[in-house]
Amino acid sequence: MNKAKPCYIWDEKLIEESDRLPAVIGRASMVHNIIEAFNLMGKLTVVRSTPATYEDMREFHSDSYLNQLKKYFEVDEDYMSTARDEEFGIGYDCPPVSNMFDLVSCVAGGSVTAARCLLLGVSNIALNWCGGWHHAHRAKAEGFCYVNDIVIAIEKLRKKFPKVLYIDLDVHHGNGVEEAYSSNKSVFTLSFHKYEPGFFPGSGDIDNIGSQDGTGYACNFPLHASYTDDTMEYAFEKVFNAIYNNFEPDAIVTQCGADALARDPNGGATLTTRSYCTCVQHVLDKRKPTLLLGGGGYNHANAARLWASLTALVAGVQLDDQIPEHSDWPQYGPGYTMTVEPTLARDCNKKTYIEDCIKKILDNLNKYVKPISEEPVTKRMKTEGEDMISKTSYRNNKLDFRKKDSMFATEEKNDTAKNKSEVNDVYEFID
Ligand SMILES: [Zn+2]
Figure 1: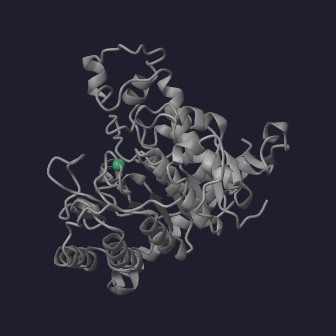
Figure 2: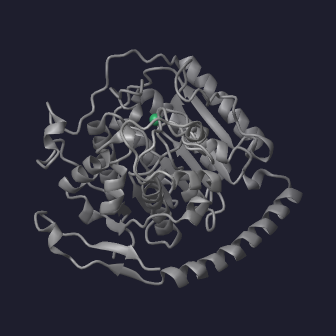
Figure 3: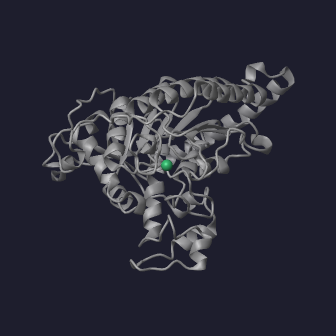
């Protein structure tokens, strides 16, 4: 096992269950298949995903919500949502599905497994393209999201990494994650998204900066329709570096929702894989423990192109533009290449608008989020004391983890991979 290799979270059941998500039927296997077709698995540490437990999910979700999810076993196609379902957001854009609890356990489990890889130092980077469901609330499903795997993973990470920076690249505002940490200064949330009247979820204005203790620790960059690679890269670089320097995170979680790519049926931006790769490279350059997640992405072929590109980026591989022949190959026509072309739509973001947003964000940062070294001496001493406490508890946690995860098993190379050009080891946590 090579410690430097990024961890790629995978499991047959994780893919199978994620394939059942009503908004993205079959997408998870398409993403995994292209990554496999490019032979990227050999450059990664493949870690078998373990489903999340009820207790794991309780780190964010309420008992009443989780117990409600346990009630859906066999759901008929003509199922009519009840008032009780609607109370928990089940219906409309989050229809009930059969064996709902298994599905959400697997989806959340992928991100919990990824967080575990970072906590145990298996690698500094972990990928779970089946995760990234940023709209789910504590007691309510919303916007195709039944379980907020992101918040659950961040809660795990915080046991060792006191300050977590969350970055959301999805075309929609990362409302569920922002809401979870709106009054918390240990998790800084940064979301870039399209913000237009009537566009889901309707939140994410630049003036929403968190509340109470967390004031200044939420940042929203609302963009007008058809934002381009140039706009995104410029805005990201200015804002990300400033936040990173002021907040000084111990770990970074990035939701790489693919629906800001050009031609997404639910999007309205015109990005290509270029700006996503540039932004993620800026994150990787900081060399902090980093978790990369999926999210939206309703043009499945483009989502697969993006996440294969990001997988190659972290694996340090230059991909051929031609997509290798594999079972899903026909779905990449007519070009069968990795290129996502931008559309000709005009970028509605004027330079002055972007500069104004950047200025507002930097002003807020300087007002609320100062690096420790710039704080008055009395306050600095207090912070050091707090640090010692968190370090002690971190040591204790680490011992616990060692006890539980002292062994890491390798699955024997087996004949299920007989048709693959390369056989890969799969690592697994042993409890
Ligand atoms: Zn989205």
